[in-house]
Length: 134
Image 1 (cartoon, one colour):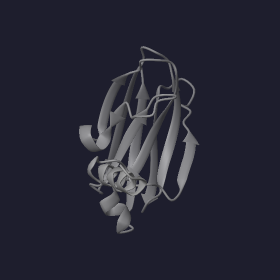
Image 2 (cartoon, one colour):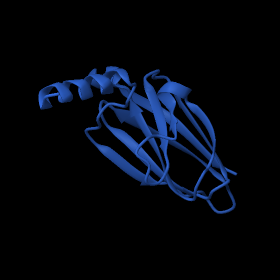
Image 3 (cartoon, one colour):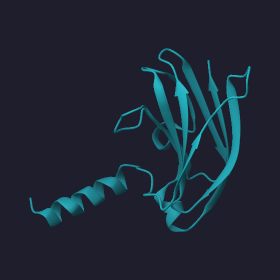
């Protein structure tokens, strides 16, 4: 295959795979729970191709629960394990509520993003992200 055909094929696969839109601006935040608690609720907003990556340190065997609530139906999240190239949990496929047993200790990333259809229109999504680790 030529380089041009490979580029077109890669672009096509990204469009149909349900992958998040390529972000213009990625805001990175580290999540810390208040002393004596095992959860946190974050209220924020994304617009267009922007996204937010929340980093949370967890240990193998713990259960991490994530709930994303928004009035924008095109807002989703993914959970990615440390060093992984693919999401452990893909909200656009599995929904906006997850409960995952953590396979290995480290900093996991919860990536909140608008799907390409909404990002292209420059939509804004206010959201509430609830994280809990037991």
